[in-house]
Figure 1 (tube, rainbow, N blue to C red):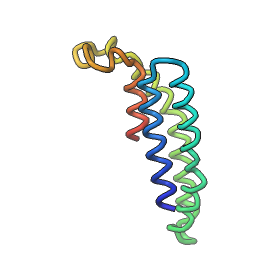
Figure 2 (figure 1 turned 60 degrees about the vertical axis):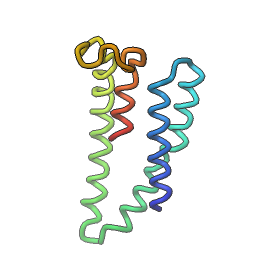
Figure 3 (figure 1 turned 180 degrees about the vertical axis):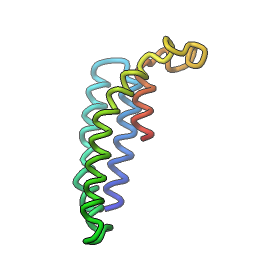
Figure 4 (figure 1 turned 90 degrees about the vertical axis):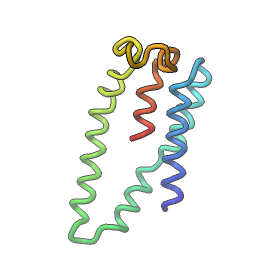
Length: 114
């Protein structure tokens, strides 16, 4: 299960960076397709979690997974929207860098890291 989980995470990371660096619609669609292909980790995660918890902590473990997933669905779009065009909101830090020519790279790098 670990190789499947790590392969999915590595592929999703590469797809997110590719999406942030995309310059045309074809590249962006390919990146989203790769991200969708590699992001089938929820089933593997649930199976792996089921193997590492015992009967006394099973409910707590699966509820924690659901809470984390729900928080990610709430916080992710807010954070991603705030990090777009970093050269405009923080020109002293991001001006003249790759983030000026690729304004969607910073939110996608944030997604790739977390």
